[in-house]
Length: 231
Image 1 (cartoon, one colour):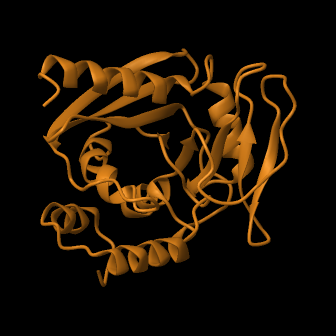
Image 2 (tube, rainbow, N blue to C red; image 1 turned 90 degrees about the horizontal axis):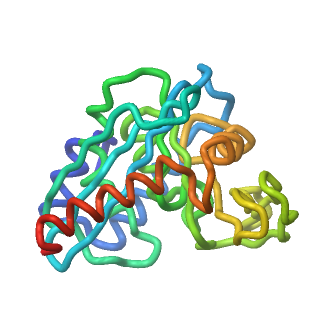
């Protein structure tokens, strides 16, 4: 792709025309366009986006979490065919075509998106969260259950403790303890904020292991998929 537009990206993925080599080149281009720096606004909302998969059909869900009120203020789902088979390191091909249209409909300002995947903590420097952030021009955070690359020390056992994740001599993410004594999640910058801000936002919205916007988006997507027969 000579330019980065999410509409064109979704069409290309749906057509099944992006080969591995092209997908990897696309991620390298995204990595060059990721901006790591302070947020230009004080976030009012966190938007969790996740997808549940059946054999042929998938359901994407977006949940808007009001940081001040600590509750959901908007949610929406979208059904569609599974865009691509799972390929390690190319998770964005499977997930981004479903979540991008939903995120473009969020009827609020001042939000940061949380994606269940990686941002800069990726072997090519850009995972799902970076793809979504760069294509939409929105701040995004990757939050995953395990490392895709790199290593780091174990954080303290108390809630809010974190330690850096390093890959090829660069700090690419963090292990964050979102609940005392529970396995940490991997947080990384997707686009448009600092790692410290990303860690702070995930921590602020966490009650269980994963932050509430992501946990609730996952539950909503699974519920709708189940009601549709889990096709």
